[in-house]
Structure formats: structure tokens, C-alpha cells
Length: 218
Image (cartoon, rainbow, N blue to C red; front, side):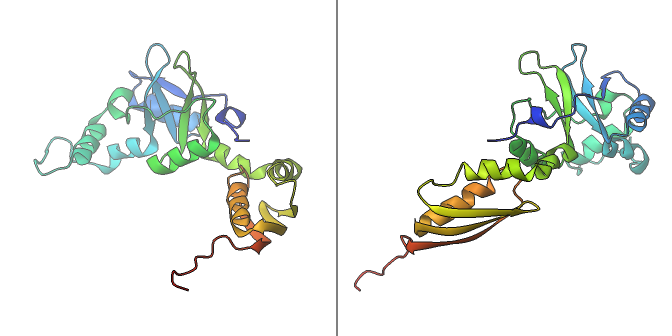
């Protein structure tokens, strides 16, 4: 069973309007101890995100009016942000969002691929922001109770096979015997996909090797 964003998300979203000035954005980040704020339109729909990195360009980038034709699009955008004074000018857009029904695994992949630490959670019907998913929320899947984790894993085990499992701090050890070697491999990979599993140690033996390739002519 996949854990979804709604099971771990924060129910509070720190947002600012597109017209919010630079100093108000900094104040909001300090007040709520967050590294980014979601920029919303008048209907509370996310249009972008302003992160600490975006704001730091104001101090780091001093070249704001002399633009070279040899600059990349990214460099030009950084100059624009450095000169920006409102959320609309400073934000990275479009906003990358998830919904309550997005799996935590997919959200984690999105965070990793986009190199971001938090995601606005939007209502699937209205498109409005209803919460925030932080990296620390995603990592909560690794604190699942051991009995809950064990119950989900045992439900995956073939009832016809004599297998046992042990769980120690998220590391699952599977022992026993199956008929085919491919079964042991498939079982190991299936357990790896369970939310909260840190690693899998497979000590399962097989009676038959259906992965052995016999060279032709022998």
C-alpha cells in the first residue's frame, strides 16, 4: 500500500501574493522558519515559488543592468531576479505542485529531480493551495511502526512458501526457501518498494535456478 501525500503533508501553507514586496517575503520566511514561500494569485492558486536562493541573488548578483549577449537564459533570469522587488519578479515559475493523492514516493522523486525542498499541495478540484509537503515530511515514512511495516510485508509473501522476515531499524531480512530463483529476486524487489523499508537482505534459497542460461551446442 503506497503512502500518499495527504498522510504526511503539513496542513499549513506559507503563501504571499504576487505583489508582495521583497522585505515582506523575507519577514514571512523568518517568522515561519521556512526556506521558501508559495506565490499565489487572487484565487489562491499557486503561480510560483520564492526560495532563499532567489532572494540571495539580491546580495550575490551585482550585475543588474549590463547584460551580455553571451549570457545564457539562466544567467539572464538570475539578473532579472536580482533586480526584482516583488514576488512576481523574484519567483521561479511555474509552481511545481502535488495533490493529496500523489504518492510520497513520486513526490520524493520530483523533489530530487527538481532539486527542491518543499512542494505546495493543491486541491484537485479548485487548484488552490491547501498545504505543503516538506522533505522532512517525506522522510517520516522511515519512522513507520515496525508492526505496521511487518504486516504489509507479510501480506506480500507467497502463502505456499516457507518464509520468515525480521525487521531491524527499517532493514528487512527475508529467510526461507522458494521453488524458483526468480521468485526470490522478485520478492526482494517487491519488498524494496514498501514505504519505510531502508534496505532488504535476502537469504532466501531456491530449489531450481530458472535464470541459468545454458550455452547452445552443449
